[in-house]
Amino acid sequence: MNSPLNNPIPGRKILVTGASGYVGGRLVRHLLSQEFAVRVMVRDKNKISGQPWLNHVEISQANANDFEAVKSSLTGIHTAFYLLHSINLGSNFDEIEAEMARNFARAAEEAGVSQIVYLGGIANDKQISQHLLSRANTGLQLASGSVPVIEMRAGIIIGSGSASFEMLRHLTHRLPIMTTPKWVSNLTQPIAIRDVLWYLSSAAALDKPVSGIFDIGGPAVLSYADMMQMFAKISGLRRRWIIKVPVLTPALSSLWIGFVTPVPTALARPLVQSLISEVVADPAKSITALISPPPEGLVQIDRAIELALSRTSQNQVESRWSDATQPTAPWQKAQSDPAWAGEAILRDHRERIVETSRENLWKSVEQIGGDHGWYGADFLWWARGVIDRAFGGVGLRRGRRHPDTLRVGDSLDFWRVENLEEGVSLKLYAEMILPGKAWLEFKIEEVVVDGRKMRKISQDATFSPRGLGGQLYWFAVSPFHVLIFPRMLLNLVRSANRKDYAESQLKGR
Image 1 (cartoon, helix red, strand yellow):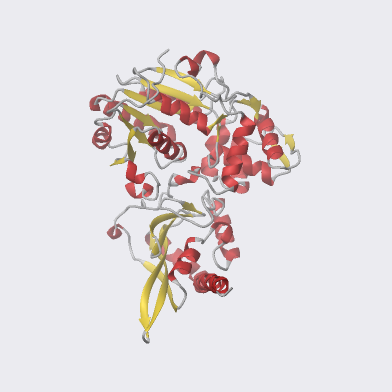
Image 2 (spheres, one colour):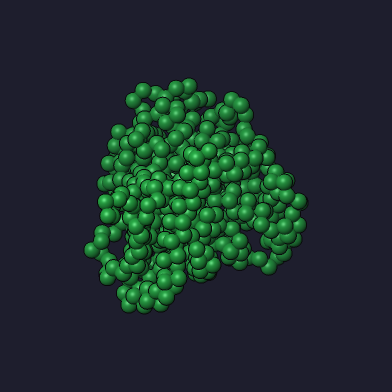
């Protein structure tokens, strides 16, 4: 057996694509803990500027469709992990994925890469969704070059923050009675995220390049209904009533999931379509022929769910499905477009001069959104989220990775943290469906008023409209801005003042 080495080989450099995603972000940390030299390939390096491993990796900025940029990223690399995905980029996502994979395979060949490792989806059932077919075809395209490809195929990955996990968790927690399609009786073989990371990182330490397709699965095969009941039991909930009906198509199911769970319809649709297949590992393709299971054994599914729920409740989620940037609407420009690419800039500016400490002002700024809410007019924020979900957007349910702290790249309801300077500024980019681009920014500055040191906190809602429709949109919602933005800043300051008061009371004891 071509077994993995106990230690990384000196001089062997690893490339991780998709490092801003759920598996990629965790794989980088896992490889670094094993003392591999790691380079990450990202479209925009600003998207990972908040990652704790940022200063321990090389960063290569490249678009997967840019051959020369990809080739440059792959130069000097021994093993390249291909973790790119395009399932929520439209109906032709399979064509996009195939082109990206062909480009990567050719670039890897010319750059002299020794091994490609790709994480796909188990596709052994005769009834295969477009999503799983695309995953399998991506593996074929990667293997079209001369570089050996290890294609690992997994089913549902159980871990805090994974899209499949969050979808099933929220369905189970929120619905004591469920009318479900007949696919809930289909069999699946889920696997814990830590076991996925074990197999992936072990592939980086193989002594010789390998080609082949290998299924990776956990120790148990069960139905989706069984897994939902397991979620309920571990969460201390009563057994769920699951009523199977034949009329719920994948399209209707994904709309329902988009309404009930944080996972938006655009992402839920390919996930639900995959559930029509039985996702069970084929013993003939077992990974154990190449890599032994972890020394402590594979994680049992109930234990994997316990660990994931525990991480979620303790706010220790390393990465989430929402870490990957959501695609914009056709009329929205890319987030990284230069300022001159837009049209007129429309702005709602508010500011207040306060005696409140900078530290507590910042704490209140950083706690915005999620379960904390938006400092007033929460019903209007909720209504805007519902409208966004109705048009296929992400809505408000994504919440936050952590209730009190943010990092660049974090999703925050229907915003994303674009820039953050501790104690100074927070800039959010809107990922709701809009006829243009929008930002919400907070800044804290030191000022002197009548010889006294004070703080100025400013709040700017900025909108770059797309054509006449964008301008009409801004003026249509401006009356609501009058209800939302002044109250938001006022309540934010009040929150900070309460923190100041609580601290003064503690000091006075």
